[in-house]
Length: 140
Image: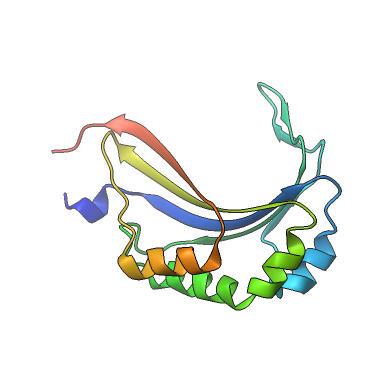
């Protein structure tokens, strides 16, 4: 098993979170259609029941190379960076975040962000959440 085999899934999401979000206006301002929309009160999980406390506008993309050398991630960041003035306008509606989600079957994993990716992130100026899920198997 190589290091690249340890991560099974990775995605990057641009999220706008707030109350009574104008979803169509956010999409038009950013020039991006959301992949998912959550409204306050939507049931997120049945057992135990969890409901959304706020609206969420989400644009998420799967990443092909989960170890960080991912042109899809750089492309997403560069596309978001082109909408910097749009991002400033959208900030009036709610909080804007990026979320990197990484999932692995193994107990130990690492995700590498390349210097170019870090530069793209810094240029955008949006907080990055990193979410990781590990199922805890031990690989040899």
